[in-house]
Length: 215
Image (cartoon, rainbow, N blue to C red; front, top):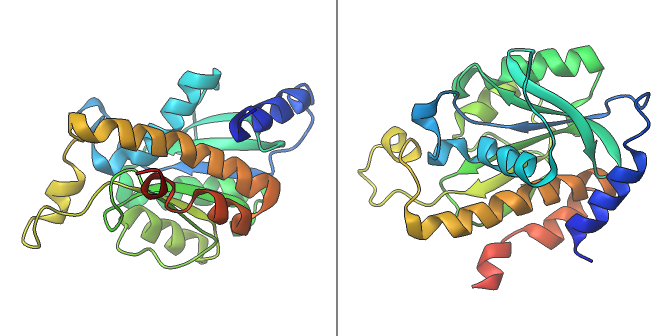
């Protein structure tokens, strides 16, 4: 039985307890609209969309300036969020949802793209700076804290140093890259479940650099 199957079984066993409060936020970052689908910057959206396709989870209610949906992950009730404010204002949705559910930063997991990582590589971090990612930067600003877990999905380095970063993150994955990034997006939600059930160190040990290790 895979790690994901174990988490899914645990979630199914607890799913009937509708009275269980939301204890975690799992936030996928991206830009709304069809023109941004499949772009590198939308890796967080891609991870949650893939999870929904695999499990039937719904993230389709407009709340907190985001598409939202409650579900079980890692044995806890979570609110999945896809902010609809565009990347640079992602923190508004996270701030409002966190305030409503009284969730501390340590229970907010953010899935985002990372241009410093090879395509398909994951990096789990318990906290830290934005590292140039504007969605993370805005979340830090609105939460007034860097102390939230994040799962970075590698989308590849710029082809050369002079290449415009905005053009790069808004470019689409090539056919050769899609298999690796889709596997990383699947693993990213598994890593979020692992953070919830076992903590960031366990998730980092299992998932950091997973795609590189398999190559």
